[in-house]
Image (cartoon, rainbow, N blue to C red; front, side, top):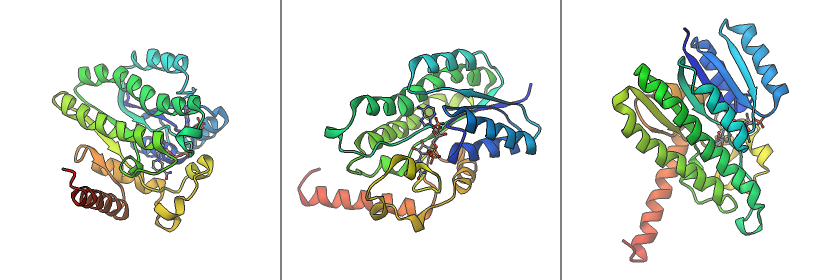
Length: 253
Ligand SMILES: NC(=O)c1ccc[n+]([C@@H]2O[C@H](COP(=O)([O-])OP(=O)(O)OC[C@H]3O[C@@H](n4cnc5c(N)ncnc54)[C@H](OP(=O)(O)O)[C@@H]3O)[C@@H](O)[C@H]2O)c1
């Protein structure tokens, strides 16, 4: 039985790059996203280049019934060696003015679906004594970006969860990573209609999704929290130092 990778948000952007890279590495693939047309395009592209098996499933990870069906499917598949929880989106808006159901959908995709899919594959990986889970977070987990409160908080959740999960499952030979990209060249910002993003995350500092994926694989098993790009690492360090300085100045310990 060949090893298999399950990838959410796999029909474009970072998720599609993960799919291409996994195919190159010889994984069979289970690719998940909503837009079936784009999934089919991915399927064709991968099959034209690689000899791996590819299954596509159109599912909306904000819908509990879709996630339940996926959990049923993957929890019986003992060939799963890699889970990449990548699907995500943002809804830039002040929380007070935002559509609460849309915000809850984001939490369901970033957090609830991630937890359920992770919980489903862990027993398989534990039995096989090998496996890896890559959870795609964001540098915005560390930056209080006004108009993105739920996005930032849901990504911080991913980092904390991944860090602790790695400690819990290390003994079973399972690797966990929280991948924190900064601004990456995908449709993400166009789709999310980010405002004022140029100030905090300028376009000229954008890195390619291929580079993000390469760094993720290179760092797997070496660091749990991975921040691709020196610029992004420096930005977070600077943010932490200034936050500490402000707290010190205000006498907060
Ligand atoms: N690009 C960046 O600068 C950046 C920076 C930091 C973090 N990230 C994170 O990286 C991940 C990938 O983003 P990207 O840049 O590749 O953006 P993207 O090109 O917009 O891709 C997002 C993917 O998530 C899927 N998705 C969104 N909502 C979904 C839902 N309800 N159910 C199932 N799939 C859903 C989309 O497919 P469908 O729309 O077809 O469902 C798509 O495949 C996200 O978690 C994002 O938060 C991106």
